[in-house]
Length: 130
Image (cartoon, rainbow, N blue to C red; front, side, top):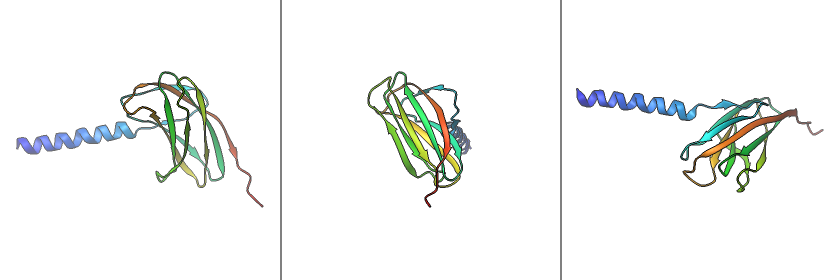
């Protein structure tokens, strides 16, 4: 009985942890500051329609970090960054199809902690080639 209770407790704890790790914040035009904690990436989403382009700014406050862009299926489709702390950098997302795109912010040094901010600069519609 003790083993069974511990197994269900462990499963519940892992489910809560997975939900916390996968929780993502929506990227907005207002800069929002976040903290990277010991190698856990920051996750941010932006809903885009097909043929839209999103320009995003990431500002490193106290940690050198880089961005990785994932499409709605979780496939890596881009990214950006600079090794210089306190320097802003741009990240562009060219949506091939509609859905929620994810921008993950990861510390340049594995396991590092620190603060960064992220904001949406603009969303435009890409012109189709004739």
